[in-house]
Length: 244
Image 1: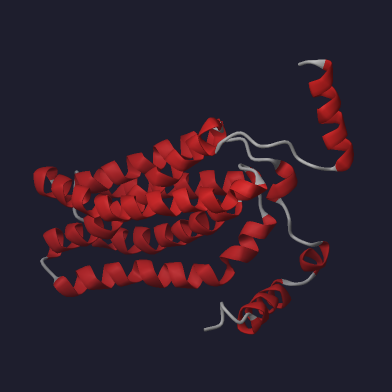
Image 2: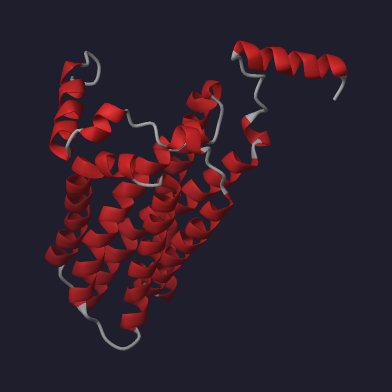
């Protein structure tokens, strides 16, 4: 680095201004994180198809297939009510790893069990539990974006993330249906578990800046969970765009 460059950096640091950040694709943490999110989204879309197919294949009951599908939605909605409170209070990088690791273990139980029997009760346990971790992951991964990219890149980064999520959500069910028809729905769920395993391991290689990871105000930390939850509801209701 030349003396003039060093002087410019020192001046920028003294002024509190940031140097121009490198492009998003030049950021290895962002590239890995985008791949992880895509794998996790692919796993979610696998679940939406493979598990109902497994239930239908094992029981022949459309009613049970619909019930299992509904359980995922119920678990996600209930968890969504307090997911933000949890994400604000834990290490988010660790939470992402736990969420993907837990879904890997939960979904891996199904193909292993199906090698010996068809315990439907296991599906009714796994599905809502996986729905809980799915919602926690979805909330947490959005909040860590500002700790991976520069402030000026957050909008573009979120655009990429939601774009890949949409692509995975569109291609995942088709791929899950193909695998289920070729080798059975239990095997498709095994592939689903593998996507979450790779995602959980990949998070180990993502560096998240700690200064932006825990940005909960002190007042919110001191408040109880009920008061914090009500504060969020009041904010949403008062916002002229979010309310309608």
